[in-house]
Image (tube, rainbow, N blue to C red; front, side, top):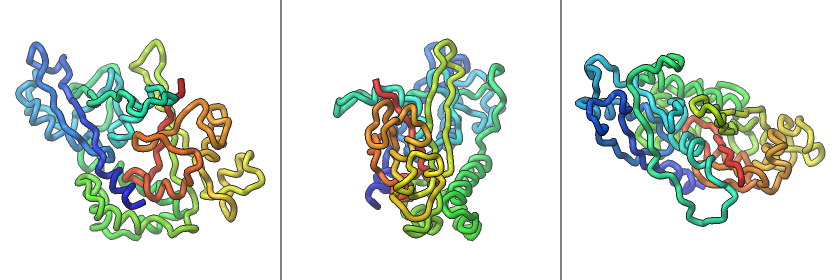
Length: 307
């Protein structure tokens, strides 16, 4: 399982980032910024480099623009800066492909083509700039929420020293899996002691008439690590806990979204994806969250509809 964690941390997504045409002084657009960026990292970490790269191409005075005022869109859809890059790619690219195809080497939309904006959009609400402090606080708050669900208390995360808390974030920025694993491992309860699974299910939805208003529906519930053999069909099975059968991805999805997952064993209408790969329905959630969670501790699963 350690190899799985290392593989996830080493995974990168090729990016092609272009400056918005309306903000570029070059008639045919500035050259794109190309980079292979870690799946577990966050796009705002690129903003200082992007500001420097597009400095001479900006119509507006670059000295008057904070690098952290930058934001990204994909197909005119604003991207949420607090979500990891890999999760964004799975939501907006992989989930739109036919998850039922049997092609062993599907044609993926790579590189992930993004548009960078520095000018505010009057048609959209003003968002807080993703400064280093804001991004750090957002990450740590997410870590705390996941930790509370796993342990039933905030004691583990609150017991970290200031140095360890900072290192948890810096190791995420630097893709330092060794440092991260040491600190994150101290937060994860021993086998059999985990209270709940920090699971979020992402269901992308794009309105037919207005793609700019694309929504991401996020499902989250109190999910125990085990289910009782009797009563698996009741909502209480998700909250039950105690002794019983290990909670699988299939049992959780069947309870959360029975219309999409009428079967606990077979993905009939939708395929669950984690880090770009389809997940087996019989996967134990406790094992998945130990070795396959994102850096903030959440098991973030994206659903791709089957054609």
